[in-house]
Length: 411
Image (cartoon, rainbow, N blue to C red):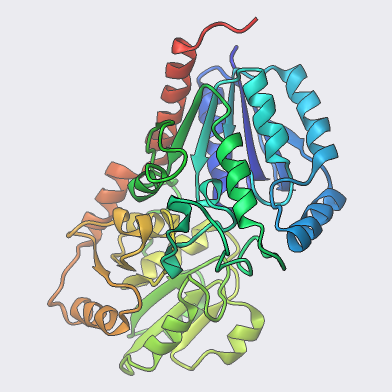
């Protein structure tokens, strides 16, 4: 029985944690023994789980990041102990997801993978692997990573630091991330694939596998269980925005929704999911805020309730919210940002330039007055055809099997 070890910042929590869990489920169904190692947020998993370090370790890594800008290069003791467990497991494939997140030492990890010649798959959910600091640079148009990072303009962005060590981080990452001999990089969007091919990892094997979603959960709903929301949008045209968290000035577009609220008609309402309690009190009357939904089924109800989904993201790789809302039959308007545009086609949504709120409003009004028409069935079928998690994550299993079929036997 082949062994799969996945490593991610979280376990069955958040988008990357759920992706790792779902890949593990499919692998197990195909006869693999599966393990998930994680830094925090352990939720129930059918895989064997290994926590790397502790809350104290996370805190220590956080402090080092803030003071030294050495994110990914702390957690030495926790990583040493974890790698001892890896030696006992002897995985046939190691699949990396987010190895940033204050929990693992990437130098020790990469040197271990290279020394033991372990075939490695690395899914790029963001850009952190090939920059000297940031996880996202598209919002500010930074291209330093293509040649060499220095004087980082985003040292106060995640992973926040008081100093700039981007030059040295870039040098260390370039050396370390090219160490494993058998490494396959998996960008989750074609846009990300193009970015990697301009980076210091351009000579590695690169295979794009887009994310998938659970179509049995995200599908058109005929009713909304939240009577309050249902009553407040009754007879209104509904514009939906969803984020796990919103900030003023955030690249997710919180401020753009506030500007949009000043431009819409009285018969239109904006629904924003993911706002905090402070924001809930500050929102204008024509924005209905929802702090948190109890489950994904409730989110699917809100997706289905909306007339259009607006995603004013200024920096993104391949947002799963676009996929989920399409699966519920609702069209998408998105900024021309990263891989966000890859979710839709001419039958399922509209792309506008970053920050073009007037252009977004024109598209919204076109849908509202019927001059632009997208059928719920077209939206649903695009999701079914392209973004079924069972199909997309099966691509990973095929990749594992291809790698093992080509790999020399290890003693």
